[in-house]
Structure formats: C-alpha cells, structure tokens
Amino acid sequence: NNGYIEIRFTEIDFAEIDFGKFSGSGIKSIKVPSSVKEIGPEAFKGCERLETFVFSEGIETVHESAFEGSGLKSVKIPGGVWIGEKVFKGCKKLEDVELSEGIEYIGDSAFKESGISAVKIPASAKRIGPYVFHACSRLESVELSEGLKEIPAYAFLGSGIKFVKVPASLKSIGYEAFGGCDKLETVEIPEGFNEAIFRGRGIGSGVKFVYKDEDAGREK
Image (cartoon, rainbow, N blue to C red; front, side, top):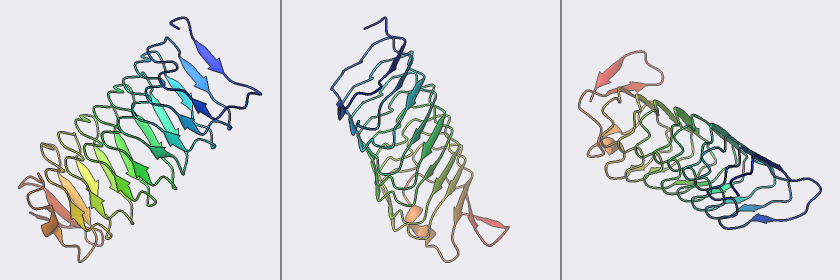
C-alpha cells in the first residue's frame, strides 16, 4: 500500500470504497468515478500524503473517519452528501472547505482539530453535530445560513473564531457551544433577534452583538 502515489479509476462501475481500503497508505491524490455512492469508514484514514480528493457528484455518503488524520489541503463537497462523524478530524493541513448547498447533515466532530480557517454552513443543513469544529484553532470566521435552527453543544469549543454570523432561524444554542473561544469579538445577529439564548453558552463578556442593519454594536 505504501507505494501508492496517484489513483484514478476509469471505466469502472462500483458503488463503494470499502472500509479502510487505503488506510495508512502513501497515496497522494485520487479521483473516483461518478458511480461511487459511498466512501466507507476509515477508507483514507491516516493517509498523511493525501493532498487531493475530487468528490464526484455521485457521492451520497461519507462514512465515519473516512479521511481522519489525512493530509488533505482543500475539499469541495457537493450538495446532497451526508457527512458522517469525524470524517475530517485531525486534518491539520485542511484550510479551505466548501460546503455546497444541498448538504443536510454534518456529523459529530466532522472537522474537529482540523486546519479549517473559515466556513459557511449552507442553508440546507438541517443538523450539525456536537464538537463539529472543536479545537479548530485556525478557524476565524463562521457564517450560519438562514434555515439552521440549532447550534449543538460544544460545536465551536476551543476554536479560534473571531466573527460569527447568526441567522434569524436559530432557536437554540447547546451547552458551551462557544466555550473557550477567547478570540471571539463579534456576533452579527438579525434585527429583533433574542440574544439571550447565548447566555451560558461560553460567550465572553466583551463580545459585541452587531445588528445587520446597524453599524454600531453593543456590548453584551
């Protein structure tokens, strides 16, 4: 396995990359055909040299820890993909992540301890799991699109976020969702939004709540 450099599948019809198929290998890049619907658990776990993975439009499910601890630098995930638990956990080099409209589920700890620097959660996302961006020290900016109703417990615990944009649809925030976010400076909220739901959720006393339609912020 350690001799793998690049893998490209052509003219092959198969639906799944099996559990641990390339785990720990020296593979650097891979492009899979549109026939692939699922990437199995731990399929590319620990592939530290893996920098590029092209997600085909046919992929529907990425299972638990599929790319955990890999060397991916950027990913664009198509709409409709179900992202399982710990899929990109510990991907320290992963800075650029594009989550396409149509993604509905992002599992627990999906990007935990990764190198992600900014993220926009698409409006289609109905659920994001606890610890999803836990300990992402390089994560500075987060935009939560209209439609998201809940930020789960510990979602951004210990991350480096400085700015969060909150949608009017948001109804609840889980325990310590922003705990340990010492660099958080500004939370942008819609006019009339009940900022009280942030209480006890790890928001520091110096954080400014800024209304979208106003230039001035006010201290919490």
